[in-house]
Image (cartoon, rainbow, N blue to C red; front, side, top):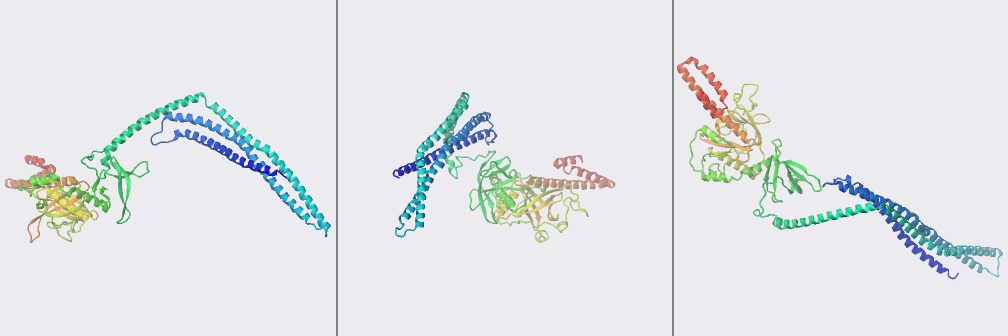
Length: 630
């Protein structure tokens, strides 16, 4: 049929255009649905603002009430958007979807059916035209004729339905475009009407006030930004030299009065026997605690208590400016803590202080003779400066090549000069408090019994025992030698101080390791700065073949009790000295009494013994008072 191609082209153009229009309207519908959901979510989040816990504070009541008001208005707008979404679905999307899915698909279906019917009719006509006139077969002719009739009828019927649909499409395309647009506009009008009902004058006044507040905050922010920018510029100019890894300390002196320090440090973690790794972390002090805070953590955690810690510089092959903080309480004796304490002591004692050098340079080389009692009193002043020195140089106190004994040698295996074996050294268990189950021990009658925990650092022979500087120099050389040779092992013992002797007792077996007669202890002192370190000089006589006297200085480390130990030794020597004076006085009085009245000597001896027991710890004043009373 002529002209049917124009209708088909028109139908194809309508289908293409409607598909594009459908996609555009569907985007509007999807956007409206998303807007409705987003508006509802916004209102929900504004309502939950007051429940938030902001690290810098969020208890602003004005801000909370303002956001609650916004949440209420936006929630009403969300309801309006939801109604608009429903109206768009019914009035806009439904009509155009029906036209696209029903009318346009019907045209395509009818076109296909008409094409099939036309092809069947053509095939029947070709078959009928091939019938032979010479050999006519009535049966075959009838079948072919029936086939032509049926196919022609079917083609005619489908053609009429197809052409009718093409004609109707000209009307339906107008409805399909106008009806969705009409529904879209009506839905928008309804939406704006609902909006006008919600957006009242009261809301406009509220929005005006909020706008004014926002402008005020903005002005404050701009002023603050200007101030911060100026501060940043000033700090950049002032801090420019600090950007160097090693700033000049003359221009930027170290602040030593800070109550709190903080900064990033690289901490070493041992990953094996000899390997280690470094991790960068933020450390800060808080009171007497060292804290660390990992990246991303809100607060720091405790690393160690640094009130009773030692801080020392250490050499490291792969890092610069390394220092070590060591904590110890006398209970944990692992090698790392022992090494830390020895290194710390070495740093404090390895270099003599300027005052130490000056004292050696200013003193004259004259030596004043003293009695043993007077020298004991002066050298037992707990690290105070002595009145005189026995030499000008350090070598005259302790020779540099003097061998150092770093461990206690049992008297069973080696006899030290001047140390006579006692019953405790022969292996008998000794109760340091003089409460053995058998016979009385040698210290049971002693008035003074004090026990201290000490660790033996070393001993060496010294040339002089006239000044505490001998003890200080011995400390310096022993600690320096330990630090140089990495000798960190120390023997722990119990030091028992009595009026007769000093004993080093094994804490496990209670066996006496060494015994030092109290009269042989001629000098004792504590380090001037490190009160954990103390030492004493023992004056001994040589063996049978050698009658010369030698002096050996013993150095120990305690649990910060060096002064207490020196006080205890000084008290023991005072008691022993007073007891010796009392015995001399007692002997003199007994002799005088025997000459005058031999029968009354025993009663006078008892009275004097009672006086000794009462005044033995009174010191010099008590001794003088007692002598005057006698």
